[in-house]
Image 1: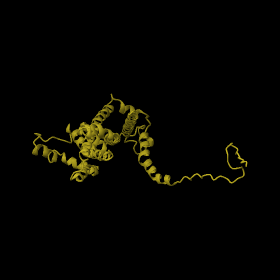
Image 2: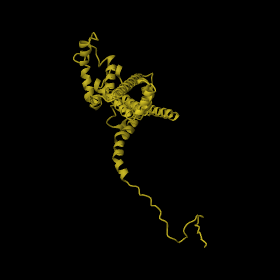
Image 3: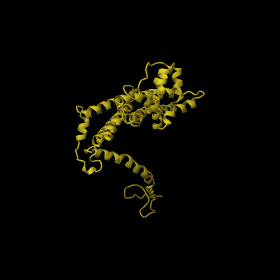
Image 4: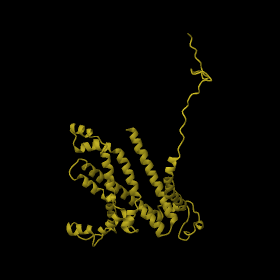
Length: 326
């Protein structure tokens, strides 16, 4: 008995023409619900970040001073003149900006480094269970949970020369210093700012590192201990490599937060930081709202934004390249 095979137009075996049509799967219709849910966040992002950023970039191209602040249309367009003025290191404005930039770099490196060291140390020491560990964890997170203005105002009272607790402990109780130093002016202002910044930042590093330690298998530590590795050897060979993804993000976030920090020096010094603690954020604020030169202040802000974008892009490219090589 012969079996006849019918070929379709493409040459493949299949049912004859005129047969029952094949059931093709229908493409699912795209729902508008995800876009509707994202719409409020997009609108707020545009209103809070994108639009002010574009307005600031436009202001940096104008000679916007107190004489034109009421009507921007009367402010003359100067192009990149504001950038040339603030980035000219031979001018007074450029020299002041360079000094603030150097202070900010030193402040950021010290604050991020100390915050990471303290956070990592506390997280590693509190990794093993013991009585009272939960209480210590909650106590260490207190600076991170407090509102920034409440915490910094408290520190400003602690750093008072005559009635501050810091001088009372160092001079009267421990007798480490012969005279009561000024903490909020002079050379000690940078130290005071750094102490407050580290006190506020290290609990965040502690929280991130502690979360990363939870994902490290205990078998790795047991195998290293069986091979005779001590505490420091296990820390260098097991803990740090396993925490590398967490540390990469943590250091970048701490860098951006610290370099852009405005609340801490503004509340601590009252908006007029001394020269030793003159961060870029405070310098931009003083150039814009103290001298009413919003054009040059906007140019400094845009230059700072471009610098942070370049540093972030370079950091991500470098870390991704190292990860691919590994």
